[in-house]
Length: 296
Length: 288
Image (cartoon, rainbow over all chains, first blue to last red; front, side, top):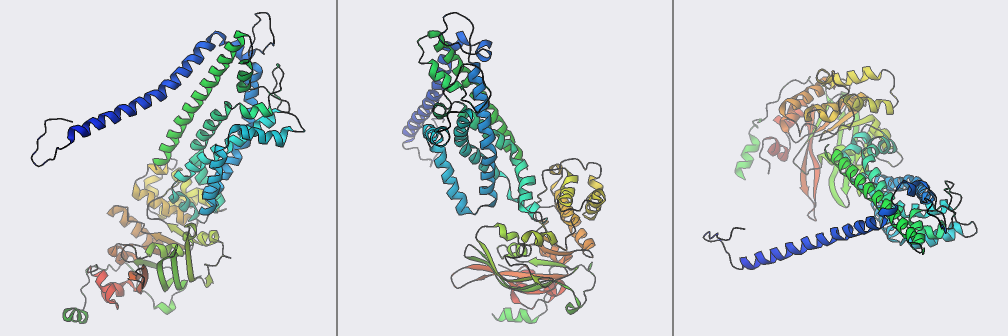
């Protein structure tokens, strides 16, 4: 960095040019990072500004009143309840299957199957949400009608590769010496996996699940096909169609009433904050569990 | 060349002082065989690691496997309890008869093999559990539920660790020093009462005092167990082993390097009057 060095024998040709290129690249990289942060900032700011007027407890507790001509307080309680039920059910479906897939691939399967199914999981992860929606529509909705269950199943399809992949990653972090320690005692592999390997990965599995929940909680397309013909009353029964936050936002955005728009923005803000805090919490757990594994 | 011939004819000065802590060994014919290994070849994804090993391991003796790095010592010892099954691409041929029964076949459950033939690894690998649970967990899982506390105490005492940990059995095993962790791993292995204990360079990561503790416990426990120990420390082999096998690296026709058993004999013989030139070079420090 100091320009005046003239050590004998130290070649300095083109050094100023190299410094300039270095500087330019640094500035470019910083700008790119700044743009990424700015985009998030603008989104959060505009959502917060437009939704602030309707962001109150009524939003969470009161049902919506369609075509309301009065100023009676209304909210999106049905959508929040529906999202809770649908995402909860989706997690209950995707979590055990995802963990079992990861355990099979990482602990039992030969390398060829592990790599092959790994690619399949990546492809499934890349399938657009609307395609999953159509698939579940054809599978569960045609002939049976929409239901919260069908919506949950669609979201579970989206969660499965996320949970499986993140579980595989933490399983791969568990040192082999630990598996050998147990197997060397003459303990069966299933028992080793259950009692020695999996407890090491709980933090990572929780993290992966939280990140997957955060991801699918905002999915709209699959729910439009599977759980969007709904009433305004709060409903916890997944056998019926359940309203959800993303679908509610979509519907309110098409309303002529500006107050509906404001409520859509407020709901978007709640969703955004939920995803933000879930991600932060997930990441915090991830670094903690990784440090715990690395510490041994 | 002339010089080398001359050296062969003179008696070899042992560079390693052989301590006589061992009891005099009865003739090999009278010893009970634990293992009879016949023509064992071990291959990693097409690359031979060990070729054509034939030897016997005797009951209640300490058998040391010595040799330079890469001679297949670890590969060989891991064959004895099917630990290599876990490595993708590993294959082996030949027979390993354990009390007369070949344990290599696919019809033999490796879990049952390892239940009888325990293992202690190069780097201490305690479970991330308490000191007590490290020893007790295996007992519980393997159905040895009677008198767990007594068994844990006995194993820790045998492993010369009890006095150091008896007041903090509930503390994490990871809080122990490296030497203590390795002794805990030995306690864990012997608590489940295996027939044979395989040790893959158990002292390579330890300081001399911890090493001495482990050597002493092998000596004290060999009336109950049979030990097979891999070591690259010749003094250690000389101190603890009754029988010593010397492995060396050979070069195959296609430039493959593989390990082979050069000489297997009583430890005194290996270190004072080896019959193979390569053994002599290695134990006198002239190797390489």
